[in-house]
Structure formats: C-alpha cells, structure tokens
Length: 91
Image (cartoon, rainbow, N blue to C red; front, side, top):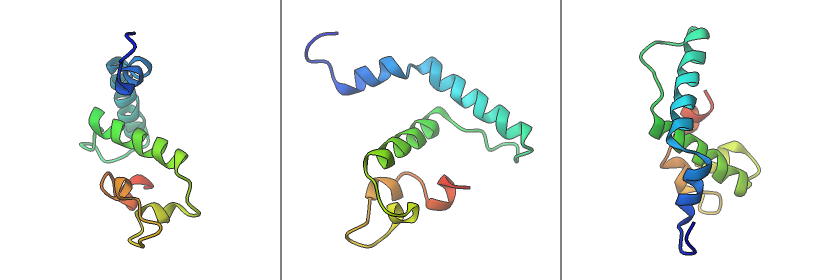
C-alpha cells in the first residue's frame, strides 16, 4: 500500500465486505436456530457498529459495563451511547 494510506484502508484489508456478509448471514442463522423473533435480521452497518463498539470498549477500560452509557461527566463515553443503548448491546 502507498505510504499515505488511511487507517480505514488497512482495516478494510482485514475486514473485507465478504467477511461482513458472512458475519451477518451466520448471526441471522444463529438467531433463527435460537428461536429468536424473525424479522430482526442484522444489517452489515449494525454489525460494523457493534464490532467497533467492542473494539473501543477493549481500548477504553471502565470499571463496569454500565459506565460506558453513564451520563456522569467523568465516565461518559458518547460514542457508546450514540451507537447502541445498553440494553440493545447486552440482550
């Protein structure tokens, strides 16, 4: 890759569109096997947001999972609360 390649380009080499499609397909299949409600299929952009959220949480450690969605000025992580709600992330 050229020297001025963006970080996103490297990320897309590791996580190509074919991988996202496979993740979505297998997640939907797993949900169906677990008798989840049909019609709640996961989209690729939702999967990307979830994986991004998990990667961000792995780099930014807080004492409790709930702290990522806290409104407290010290604990607040707007990227988490703006992506998914706490109950949506850990259902």
